[in-house]
Image (cartoon, rainbow over all chains, first blue to last red; front, top):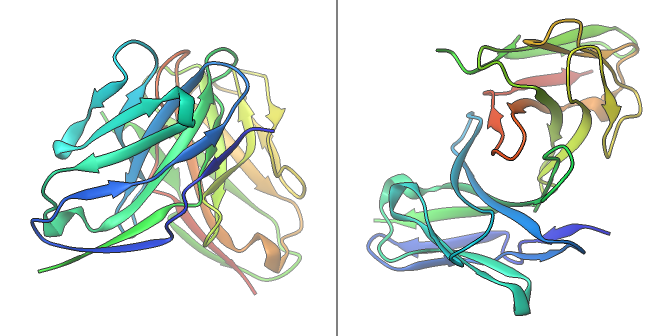
Length: 114
Length: 111
């Protein structure tokens, strides 16, 4: 069965520190992979996506993610976190065919200390 | 360009009442989706539609019905609301091979 695991429910970092949010997936075929961010009371905003090609993808707001097929992982990174990055982050996997249905992880809530 | 618009933003219902949530998109997207978001569980797909007049069940369809009479609108109905349906509901839309665009959500409480 398809699934997405985000092992860290909560993460706290200091402003200016580096960040890595983990995502592991289980999917039988070639996956599409996404990271979304959700600010309180808001909808989900796409940070970045991986469909094919270069396994290191760049997104908005200075985020990047690396697809590692051997580890079934798609971890999100940022070299220097800003206070405005405090939010909840969701990893999602979708089918490379079909109707773009997504399976979401449970999310990681990021807090940023000044 | 409003994107994906959900109506209403908040609603409180009593157990057994019915209501309809409306999702409207102005991007001419073929695919539309309804999710529910519960603490610690991420988003779970309720129903989806791949075109006008078509609907299909997602991961958690029980207790919900949907309709897509017009391409731009996707309605989610609760015929007899239950406290277990207290949640935040998100609508999304997209075209084939592209990421989904999300609305801002509807917060629904059932007493």
